[in-house]
Length: 231
Image 1 (cartoon, rainbow, N blue to C red):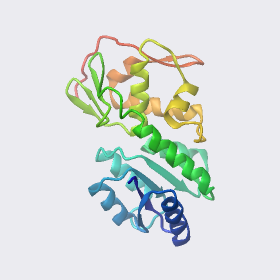
Image 2 (cartoon, rainbow, N blue to C red; image 1 turned 60 degrees about the vertical axis):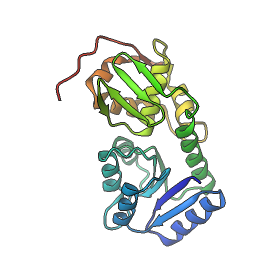
Image 3 (tube, helix red, strand yellow; image 1 turned 90 degrees about the horizontal axis):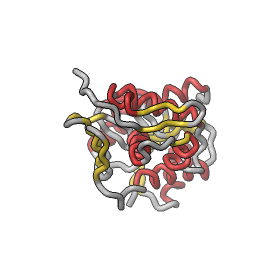
Image 4 (cartoon, helix red, strand yellow; image 1 turned 45 degrees about the vertical axis):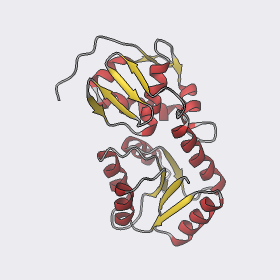
């Protein structure tokens, strides 16, 4: 059964989320404080995390950052009463997979959660390894490796990189990336794509050389001669 960890301090919202997701057939684990939620996430398999940024003790920003520092690629949906653009940009830069402003529609949240879970599991029947130049992507473990060194990517970043490599030499338009990675049910924009590409490039210099920006269209994967940077 697909498991969802809810870290939400408000008992009314938390119960509403738990009842709603359970009625959709999900297994729910729920915490009201950040520390216990983080400990559970670090030591147990979870398919999806729904995280309020304002949980007490250890806040949502720390939880998200810690998960990514520990190379946990579990997809995370952020809940926040702050709907400012800078809040969303920061959340995506920290490694979240989606951002939902409070108040929200339960049906919309369920749609977003299901879209992420479909996207995460969409490549289960594909060949396990995807290679290009010095890069190897393991589609089952979702590990990205360059010449024996692993690159720490979120699930969204990994899926974007896999899409670009599969389409090597072809311009992949931003709207295609939105459709294939997030699906039609998720209200994200082409700016989200650009932020994810920026994060992918920043994690390894060689990746930046391979991802080519095509003005007003999208991105293209090409293989230059790869020099492994000193670390």
